[in-house]
Picture (cartoon, rainbow, N blue to C red):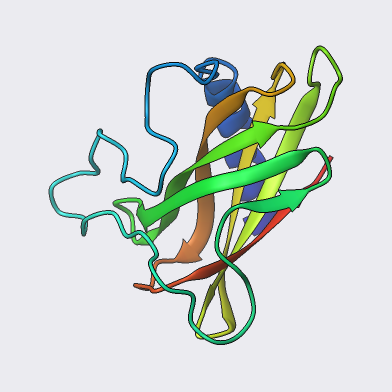
Length: 152
């Protein structure tokens, strides 16, 4: 059941990501600034990371293949699970960028607390996109470190 929820959520994120390529100009800043749109009023504010605690994971930028995680913001998605946004840059040279999915593992104190999924398609070389991230893992407050993996 969880795999079906994640698969459907990933498909929804993929459809959303197709229209989020901002070409590196305008739009959201590339730092770890929370997004300008906010979650419902009942959810806690977006969390960003500052210093990396001891243990597994690192802070952005993190590379995987021809992709680089430049920044990430995680928050409670309003339903008690992790959600977030990431700025990801395509560093390869394939002109169409292809269809790509990513997994970002979130660590707190060296312990794996969440896996977030995102996707991107048709990203030109050198371009940065904003990817919405989804998860079915219950939200816990940070600070966090991360692992970034390009899945396919």
